[in-house]
Length: 463
Image (cartoon, rainbow, N blue to C red):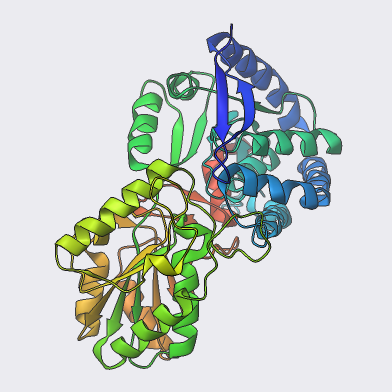
């Protein structure tokens, strides 16, 4: 009898989805089918693949009203915010479709008498995508759609928390007429996911998850020659200079810290504020945080849903408690949020001050609605503290001086530098990280480079 994968909804603790786990034989069958299907798929003109993926995007978006509440049930995002995931999916999918012709066009190295030369971007083959639950469509589309557009076959292993997302992709692609087995999804244990990534038939792995998971990917792919793209999370900082538009900074950074219950790899987790505006900024964040409505994500009035599971909430509670024991102060009284209950995934947002970098809450990843705020006395101090991290995904600066902000950004050890915004992926820009935030790149024309390989053509045309 097959083992069963169960998805426990953070909404009410009930089992929302059950699926049989695939075994080693199912992995092998899927990879055999993917390898065979990919050969034909790659031979199809790029324009045909783009047309089919465009239809699949249409088919997916047409089901938005059905897809959005499934997100709430599976991982707890408020229903008022869940449709934004479908809009974000569409933005990224359509952008990658729009640039495919140029991004995948042959490179002309220039004229050479008697020769015709070019470098083509050709698909790598079978791409394994391992996607997380926190933004289940946005993280997956970054790899799945470009990989298919480029002529690869895809085998998707989605999180146990959000298995319906893999199925909805498959339904949209089938409705569009994408050939069978070009896209497949599997429900796998951790051990069998490792087997999938280590298989010689897999040419590339696209993984979004924890640092520990990233190490497992590197170990698995090290047995062969598969490439690996890793997005492993962050401890993303922001710096509010004295010349910042303070109401805008307060609004943007509070949302950046607490949207999706703080469960975003590029969410704001630590804020450094210039001394002259520090207290005004802190007061503004606290006032705005008090306006959040914590409750069932199925309630239209809810702006802050539960975190994904009780163990995640307990980790955050312990992180905050540890910080307080070390001298930090909590500025949010949890009693203001009636739905916040110990022993449940419903967790009040928290703002901490009097924090420093000796506290794990300012150094370890906090995947939830907790943010620490520190006062700084100079740009140099802010940059030093922002770089004092094992992570480097994004960093945000709030200032009226764009020239100075670029100079400060040049000193930051991060994949993306924001000015006067945060917690957003522009599909025209490379999404990448440094240090423990990962390696490789998705989105933008650069994202196609990881999903293809260069193939050189060197023809002597005149003898």
